[in-house]
Length: 215
Ligand SMILES: C[S@@+](CC[C@H](N)C(=O)[O-])C[C@H]1O[C@@H](n2cnc3c(N)ncnc32)[C@H](O)[C@@H]1O
Image (cartoon, rainbow, N blue to C red; front, side, top):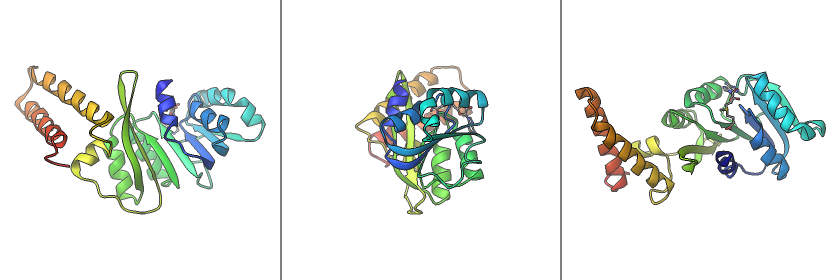
């Protein structure tokens, strides 16, 4: 639940909010309960998951403030909502959803894997990334990418493409230190030369980034 609480901190007030892959529906409840949106759309590819959200949000559904749709990604969500949340699924899935539909007017994405791929996709498809950082919750780090379809271009260095735009003195710094430790520990295993070289290279990359030798 702590991840959800932190994730909700990235959501901004809007007219229409869409929670794609809503599952339980907690993020939509946060938006509606706090009057942060006038209307919400909950969607999920699984009707079983969608039913959970419908149950949680029943009073808003009955009041006409929340509509639900069972579909893949944004496929049946018309009139591009003002803010779209896609969280808790793999980066490849998020890319596939956006590729099939459109870059939402405003978005908050929280990929569980392949965050770099999501950044690359967004930058290649004319999205502006306005916030790209990482938070910590119950022993895990989560990357969050916020942006819009304004078409304003971002410039990303290779290190920022890999790790986002978080503050090195903050959670991103903690994440990188932990990654370094994991990778150094990993080197003590019996690895192939090729794999060892790959890990050593990635350790060097992180060290240079932390030390300000690259940015
Ligand atoms: C792990 S849950 C995350 C739920 C919530 N968004 C969160 O961040 O806690 C992932 C949800 O995404 C749904 N999902 C996965 N791929 C999807 C897709 N292509 N389109 C819509 N929903 C999808 C799953 O059915 C599941 O309910």
